[in-house]
Amino acid sequence: MWSQIYDPFGSMVLSTAVAAIPVLVLLGSIGLFEVRAHIAAVLGLIAALTVAVLAYGMPAPMAGMAAAYGAAFGLLPIGWIILNVIFLYQLTHEKGEFLVLQRSISAISDDRRLQLLFIAFCLGAFFEGAAGFGTPVAVTAAMLIGLGFTPLAASGLSLIANTAPVAFGALGTPVVALAAVTGLDLNELSAMIGRQLPFFSVIVPFWLVWAFAGFRKTIEIWPPILVAGVAFAIPQYLVSNFHGPWLVDIVAAIVSMLSLALFLRVWQPKHPMTSMPRAPSESQAYSAPPDDQTLTNPAIRRAWTPWLVLSGFVFLWGIPQVRAALDGIWIAKIPVTGLNELVQKMPPVVAAPHVESAVYNLNLLSATGTGILIAAIVSGLFLGYGLIGLVRAYVRTICLVRYSLLTIACMLAIGFVTRYSGTDATLGLALANTGWLYPLFGTYIGWLGVALTGSDTASNVLFGGLQRVTAEQLGINPVLMAAANSSGGVMGKMIDAQSIVVASTATRWYGHEGSILRFVFFHSVALATLVGLLVLGQAYVWPLTLLAP
Image 1 (spheres, rainbow, N blue to C red):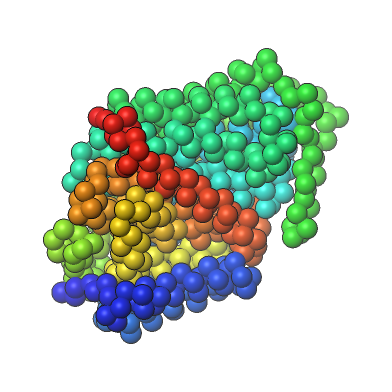
Image 2 (cartoon, one colour):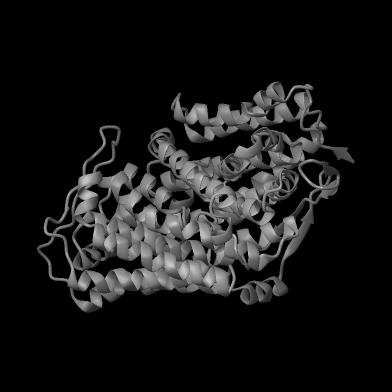
C-alpha cells in the first residue's frame, strides 16, 4: 500500500510548482511551441512519470501501470468513439451526402450564424446528453466542416458550444458520480447544478455567435439566439430540479431544436451572413456548395438518414437498461495488477483514508463507440456500400486518425498518472487555501479538474470529496461547492487536450492543436470566472433564493 502525499517538499508553493510541470509541458508544447500533439503528449507523459516517481515517491512500476491504465481508457471508450464517428463521416462524405446535408440545412437558413447555433449548440447538446465523452465535439465539428466552415471555426466553436450541457452529459453520469464520491443527496446536487447552469445556457449561445461573427453580427440575430438559449435553459432547470439528472440534456436539447426550427419559419435575418472570415493560419481550403441543383425530398431524407440512425443508436446505447443488458452478455473487468487497491488517498482531499480501485472495464458491447460503429455500418449499407467497401473505408479511417488515437491514449495516461500520484490533488489544495474567496476558487478547481482529465465525471470523482471537506471546514454549503465543481468544470472542457485533439481530428486539421487552444483559452477562463462569480454570489449574497431546496 502506497499513501499519497500532497506536499512532498514541505512547501505548498514549491510542491504546487512541481505538480504543475506536466500540465505546463503539455499545454506549453501545444500552445506556445506548436509541437505536434502526439509528440507533446509523449513529452507530457514523461514529465508526469518523472514528477510522480522522483518528486512524489510513487513506485515506478505503479506509475507505469497507472499510465497503461489511462492509455487503455483513452482508446476505449474515447478513442473508440472518435474512430467510428469519423468512419461515419467518411462514408457520407465519399458518397456526396454531406453536400446534400449542407444544402438542406441552408434551406432552414443560409445564415452561417444560425447554422452554427442549430448544429453546435442545439444538436451538440443532444449528443452530449445521450453519449458524452467526446461524441458531441466529434459529430458537430465534422458536420460544421462539411457545411463549409473553416477548420479553426468548426473546431473552436464546437468546443465553446459543448459547455453548458456537459454537467448532465451521458444521461447525468457526472452528477451521479459526484453524489457517489461525496455522499451528498443526488437530487439536491442535480437541483443545485440546475440553478447554476441555466444562466449559462442563455449566455453561451450569444457567446458562441459573438466568438464567430463579432458583437454587431450577433445583435443582428438576437431573437433566435435568445429562443435557443431560453428554450434550453427552462427545461434544464425544470428537469434537473423536479425529475433528476438523467434526461436533462436530452429534453432540453429537443425543446431547443424544435423551438429554434419553428421560430425560423417565421423569422429570418434582414442581412443573412452567408460567408465567413477565414483565419490566415488555416491552410485547408473550403468552398460553398453549388446551388444550381434542385434538392428533392428523397435526396434530403437520404442525406439525413445516417445522422438520424446515429442519433437513434447513440440514444439507445445511452439507456442504462440497454447498457446493463449488453454488459450481461459480455464484459471483462480487469484489475490493474500493481495498482488496484494499492494507492491510498489521504486527508484533506478526503475525510478519511480511502483506497483507490483500478479496474479496467472492457465493455466492448455496451461502449458508445460500438453503437456508433453499428450505426455507421447500417448507414453504409443504406448508402450502397458493400462489405468489402466498408472494410476498405474503415482501414482508411484508421490510417487517418492513427496519430489522434496515440495522442488521446498518451493524454489519458497523463491524467491517470497525476490522479494516482496525487499531483493533481496538490493543485486542487493550492486553490482550496483561499479563505472566503473559496467559492470562486473552488469553481476553478472543477475547471482545472476537467482541463487535466478531459472529463467532468473524472473531475467530480477527483475533487468532489475535497470540495465537501473544505466547504464544511469553512462553513459553506457543501452541496453548493460540490455542484460548483461540476458547473465550473464544464468550462474547462474546451481546453482539455483530449477534446482539442478530438476536434482537430474531426475537422481533419490534425497538427494545428496549438491554434485551437489559443482560440478557445480566453473563452474558457472568462466563462469559468463568470461561473465562479455566480457561485460566490450564491454563497454570500443570494443564499435564501438560490440555495433553497
